[in-house]
Image (cartoon, rainbow, N blue to C red; front, top):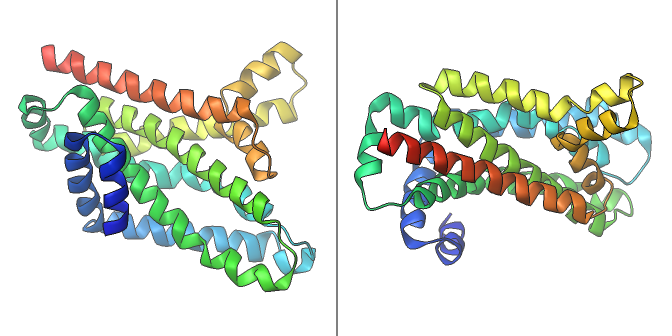
Length: 252
């Protein structure tokens, strides 16, 4: 934990880091966080070994393991982000935050990097699984790296969207449900193009807004600059909109 905080301190503004550090320790004291971690690790492992029958496939690939991440994130990401702003509004502490010497970007980046730190810890906890399987076959380390990079970028974009929805919600329940529904849409909307014969321009437009679609290249071990830019731009866009919402409420 201290290593993560030291890395954050060198990457983000000091005031945003102060807020991020406070948020991280709040997550570590929240039972919901540990429930989300256990669900994430258990479900992904069960999916790989039971539903995908990893040992019967006789293939040295973890693609089936990472392919379920977009689905699991539909429930895990809202748990991470739901309290960030909704709980501040419910308890009335958001007014206190807005009167402190923080800019809108300080507040948004502080919340964002605390959530990213939580997601990073969850991804790190999955590393023992591929390490335990390395002796069973010739796995491609480059592919595994790309899969982890894609999972991080996918989670980053989903977190920024979840924070925006939390900022628009009045309580944690509303933030969780709203985030889960919206994430389900942006994760699975590309399935429409797989099951329906649509015009090419419409299919490309639907695929473009799908987070899971842009994750596919990473799950195959490929770093497509278009997908890389999509995750970076979408993350920045959602964070920017969140700052505008906060600014509007500050002057309301």
